Amino acid sequence: MSKITRIMEKVVKIDGSLGEG
Image (tube, rainbow, N blue to C red):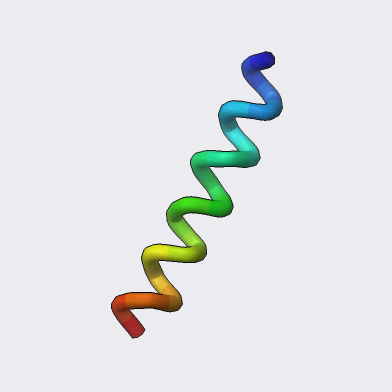
């Protein structure tokens, strides 16, 4: 569960970065 949450957080961060960029 912890690994999945970490992956999701990374994806969200990347998605946010792309949206802002």
